[in-house]
Length: 268
Image (cartoon, rainbow, N blue to C red; front, side, top):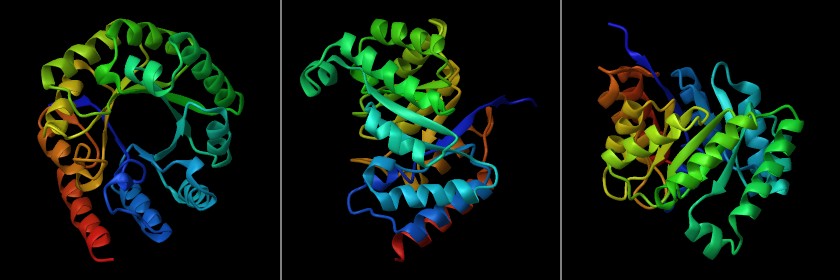
């Protein structure tokens, strides 16, 4: 039976570390990255270079020692952040762009014209260094789909590798997830990934809906770690999708990863 290919982007080392009381040591980060790489994870989001020099050093070590996984880093929509990300020499730089009007007008106190120019400047900066760029639509679940569709089409014109639909506040439902991902794909977007939070207990269900709509991949974390109620759990997604999608790692390897993660997270 030929299964549809889909990909996991694991963000344990970035969003997972935002769990309450969670702070990985450099050694733990290297171990986690090695585990994910060996298990066949397609892409590892290794951290936020703007956090500190120590963070950048660990990311550089992860990049140098990975065997197969692609390594990405997370950057705010800020040229200084992008420059720090470039220092780590990842395979790709992920630029997070707040797209809801709540974020644009109330949080940033800017407008859509400023957002678009700032984003394009950051993309151009990263691409000038030879880096592939992915763009995250932050707070996409509260954003206007027409605005996001136009922005997604522009991202394709700018050579952006992928865009990410981020349910930042964890309010999506499976049907709405399907509809939004499908609309972005049909508007001419680059390949779309989905980043779901588990506030309503539906991160895995929403992720499955995103795959059904044609998403390129899903962001997960080991044991569902993440801010507030956490992210989509890697093992849960792999087990739920095993009969319909060709995902790496295998169910057995996903269960092994979870077991090893518990030993790292809860015995130190």
